[in-house]
Image 1 (cartoon, rainbow, N blue to C red):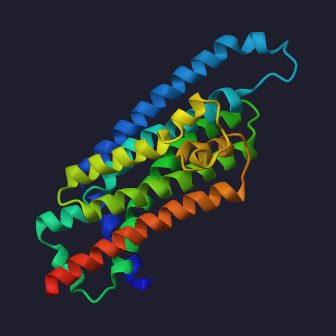
Image 2: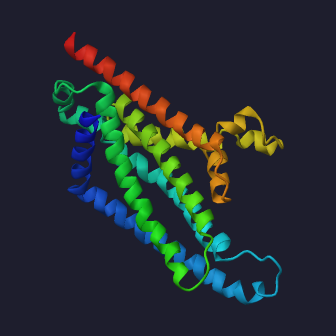
Image 3: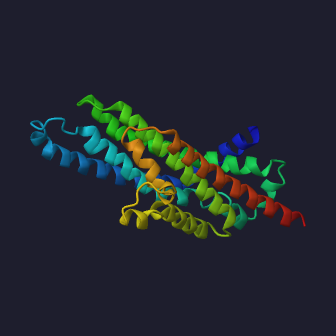
Length: 254
């Protein structure tokens, strides 16, 4: 594990010195801030009419939670860009053989790359989460529902990061890795679309879709089945990346 943490620290420092990571983060923050202001403006426009409605939804349900849910859609495109160079970039730069010869196991390398990219994602989520949390100074927020939503986002980001690492391990070029990760994430997001159009909402195919397991968190429901799903996706993706490094190490020593 110490080897994985060493790789994670190296990956985190590399992201910190890359202009691309800073520009990407700034664009995401600006986009989400603008969306937050639009959502808040829309809420303020209808707030006077909600005062006379019994059990009317508040700012948590109408602004904070939808805003954080929208962040999930943004992460589906951002995290593949963050992870695309994790392993494919090492291969293109010719530095992957040095990593493989460092004495660290393949699992440690993959987990380290994963933790480094996940740290970037968590920092981004934390900064964006400050926007809805700032509303607590002037209104009453459902902090329990917000905490559940943020937990779902973290698990969702973990799965996306692991998928990105796996695609980076199997692709020869970073751009190809990003494209594959976005396509795979999109497939996992709409795999149950046909079933839902037929009115099927509780079948096995629905269980495979990423949004199916994120939505309960946005409703304040933290279920073990959803946590296990994200953990399984993360574990399988990292296992596939480790298997790919096994093949690359074997071919390098052949």
